[in-house]
Length: 384
Image (cartoon, rainbow, N blue to C red; front, side):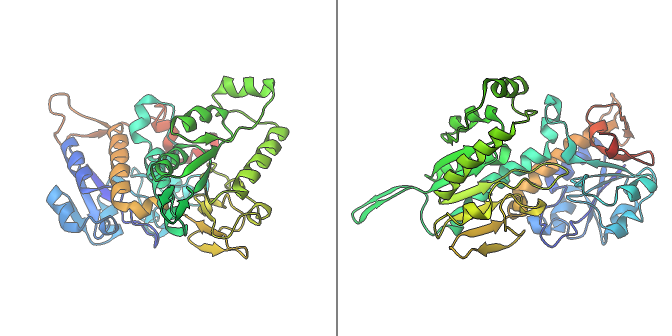
């Protein structure tokens, strides 16, 4: 059975779905691997490295897909390639399912498409397949380095004969995987860090990393609701949201650097910082908007652009930070895909490395069923 590796069809994407190390793992499982020529170049994996690992090279995406039963990709496949797919083929990648306009096309061609972003993150056996966590971890780290590069002053406090340099004050809005890594990185660089999140349960995580929690008073009823759900399914009251906005406005106005990470699958990113707050910030302050590609947490941010406001605040629309660390992010992403692909196959117990693989597609399986957005000629996303 053959697995194809399709090159990212995106000017701003340097990652590759399968690395040479991942090729070796797939070969041990009994697969053959076909790599589109140049697919790994942006991540510093040339075609010779893939061939040395045991893969074959195809000149184009169409040639790569022609013989492959499973196609791996970073983002969605080009529309021209989808038109050439045949019934029974499988596509695995970060397909942006809620905004993907090609799902009907996948279904009409009889393709089973798995969107890795939909992985149930509460399943312990799915943790090694979690592409959102693996990529967000690196993104949170790199976001702080981007901020340090844009900021005209140092992060740590310096005691010098010419005077004392105060540490940078950094605010993190959104304390998921990216936010927590950003806190840890900023602290290592010597910044004073504060953080906020709609999940009160994140307070302990923030403080464990040395950050200060931006506390928002809540009623006893709200506290019970948040505690009962661990914070994830908690719907705050309008008063709580208003109180949080006031506290965030005050903190952001006095900050040197702000990093926002909040995104909601299938929806525009929530607006966390408005122009009225930006107008209060001092010249030289930096805003890193990690959600710029989905509408932006910061009013006025533009994906892949850095904008300087009239009062001297720099707004960085950081659309695809993992691609800036293409080699490492590709390694982690490829491992995620290999671990998922392993769940799709059955092997002989007597000779698990033999090329006697059989697909075991099971939409009742809690992982496969959650990730499959098209199968058996149907779009499954609407059923969620």
